[in-house]
Length: 450
Image (cartoon, rainbow, N blue to C red; front, side):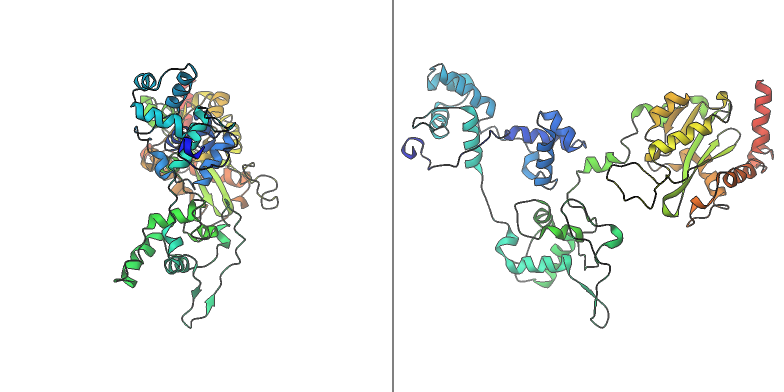
C-alpha cells in the first residue's frame, strides 16, 4: 500500500469526523455572539459537539475563523470525485468537470484512497480524513521548548505575595480548580497576578540581550486556554484578573448583558406624546440596590412626578439553600419575581394611568414581554449608558437615598414602611409643578378626565 499510495500505514479514523468546513462555519457563528449550543444547531451538528469544540479551543478559534484556502480540495469536490470515479469517468474528465488539474485529481485518487481490503477504493469521507490528518503541522509551543521562559511566566502568574519583611501572606484558602468553574471571588488566592501583557513586556526589561526570553501575551493566553498545548498548568487561569477558564468572544460579551432588548422596545420607538409630558400615564422605572442583593423598585410618572415603590423581599431560602446553576433567583428582583411585583403595583391605579414604562437595561425586566401581555403596559428600554433618558426617575432615586442610604440592607424595611416613604415624596411640593405636590397634580388630572 505504501508503494501504491506513497504513504505509510495510518491509524484507523474510527467514526467519521465532522468536516473542517463545518467547524469553520461553527466559529463564524460564534463570532456573531450566539452560544455554542445555538451555533452547533445552526451548522447541523449536535449541541455536545459544539460545546466540545468551544471548550477544546478555549474559546479561541485561531485559524479556524479564517476560510479554507481554495488551493485545497473541499469535501464537496471530493464527493463529486467519488461519484464520478464510481461511474468509471476518466481522470482528465473528472478534472475538467470540477475545474482542477488532472495531476491534482490523479494524486487525490492515489494518496487519499481507502486501502482496507488490500485494494485502492476512493471514498470521500476517508479521503477528507486522510487529507486533514496529513495537513497537521504539530509545532511544540515556545513555552514547552524553553523551560526557563516557562518558569518565568508561571512564577509571575501564580507567584506568592510577601510583606515588607519578606514573609508570605497566604490570603484566603482557595477552593480547588475544577475546570470550567472559577473559584468564588471572595475566596480567590492572593498571588502576584501579573497579566500576560505585563509579563511579555517585562521580559524585555529583565533580559534585554537574551532573545530567547521573548514571548507575546497572546501566546501566553493560548497556552492557558487551549487544551493540548500543555505548556502551562490549566489551573493558572484562576490567577488571571478575570478568572475565567475560557475566552469569551467579543460579540458575545457585548450582547449577553442586553440580550433581552431588541429594536422594537428601544426608547427611539416610544410614542412622541411621552416626550412633552402633557398626558399622564407614562412612567420611568429602575431599582435602587442595597447590601446583600437587596433592592427596591422605583416607578415615577413623568407628568405628575407621582412615585410608587415596589417592595421586593427576598425569596424563601435565600442564604440558606445552596446556589443552583441556572436555578431560580432568590434575591428578590429576578426576572419572574420582578414582573409579578410590577403587575401587582400596576393594578393599584386606573388603567388609563398606565400607558408605557421606560426602564433601564437591567436584566430584572428581561421578562418584559409577559409583563406587557398580562398588564397591557408597553415597555421601552433606554440606550446604553444613557441615564439622562430617564432623568425623572434618576432624580427621584436621588431623593429616595435620603431614606434608603447606599451601603444599607434594604430588605430590613417592610411593605408598610416603604409605602410611607412613597407617600411622603408624593406630598412634597415641587417647583416644576408650580409648588403643587405630585399627589395633587395626579388628582387634578383624574378629576378633569372623569
